[in-house]
Length: 336
Ligand SMILES: NC(=O)c1ccc[n+]([C@@H]2O[C@H](COP(=O)([O-])OP(=O)(O)OC[C@H]3O[C@@H](n4cnc5c(N)ncnc54)[C@H](O)[C@@H]3O)[C@@H](O)[C@H]2O)c1
Image 1 (cartoon, rainbow, N blue to C red):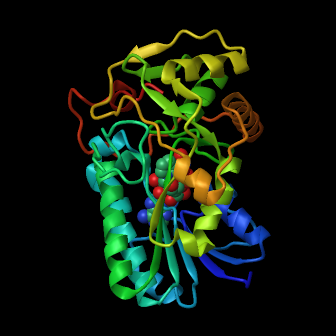
Image 2: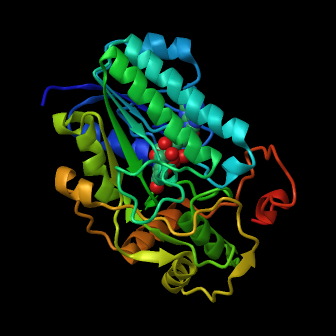
C-alpha cells in the first residue's frame, strides 16, 4: 500500500501507542498528539512526530491536519465510573474534543476518520451486544461516546468523509495506565497486589466482563483505517468468550502473583452495568478477528511489564466535581 499520513490522537495512551507502532512498522508516517491527562510519555513510539496538544485546540488541529489521509481518534478521558462524578471534565475530553477533531478533519478533506467509541454505548441492552442494537448508554461517558459517534456520522456524511466506529472493550496489556485510581481494573489489581495491598471491589464482584489482549486487537483496529468494506460501519473489538466475574479476575490475578487474597468490598458504583459482553461475530467475519492470547497469559504479560517498569503509588490526578454519599470511598477518601 502507498505510504499514508496518519494522525493519531491520544498517542501516549494504551491503544494509540500500539496502533502507532503498527502503522510505523508498515511504513506509514505517523503524527500524534496527546495532552498527557492520561497515558505515559514513554509509550510514544520513536518515529512518531509527537506534539503535546489538546484535542480541544481547534486552531492547532485545523493547521496540522493539512495533508493527513487518515485520522485515528483514540484520545479520550476513558473513565466510565468517574464520569458520573466528573461529567464536565469527561464530556469536554470526549464530546467537545471529538467535535474539534472531526471538524478539523472535514475542513482538511482527510479521507477517513476512525473513532474509538466504547462498549458503554450499549448500556443496559441485552448481552451479547451486537452492533445493530440501538445504544442505551447509562452514564455520561457512554452518552458522550455515542454523541460523538452521531456527530461523526452526521458531519462525515454531510461533507463526504469516510468514517468507521471502533467499539473496543476491556483490552489489557503493557502500556496501560496502572497508577490511576479511577479506571483499568486489571491494572489496579496488579499494582495493588504488587504493593502487598488487598484490592477493593465495588459491589459484590459478580459483575462480568470479557477481557482481551492488545496484540490480538491491533490487526482489526488497523484494518479499519484502510479497508473500503469498513467504511460507514461500527465494529465491536474484543472477544465474546472467557466471560469472567470481577471476583474471579481478582482470584486469577492473585494466583499468578502468589498473593494471599482477601478482597475488600466497598459500595457499588452508580450506573455500573452488571453484565457487559459484546458479540465478536461481525469482527470475526469482516476483520478476520481471531484472538489467541488467553486471559491468564495476558495478565502475566501485564504483570511482567508492570514489574519491569516499576510498581507505583496511585495518583489522584483528577478533580471530583460531585462529592456526595454516592461517591466511592476509594476516591473521596483516597483509599488506594
Ligand atoms: N482500552 C480499552 O479497553 C478501551 C475500551 C473501551 C473504549 N476505549 C476507547 O479507546 C480509546 C483509547 O483508549 P485507551 O485505553 O488507549 O486509553 P488511554 O487513556 O490509555 O489513552 C487515551 C489518551 O488520550 C489522551 N487524551 C485525553 N483527552 C485528551 C485531549 N483532550 N487531548 C489530547 N489527548 C487527550 C490521554 O492523555 C491518553 O494518553 C479511548 O477513546 C477509549 O475511550 C478503550
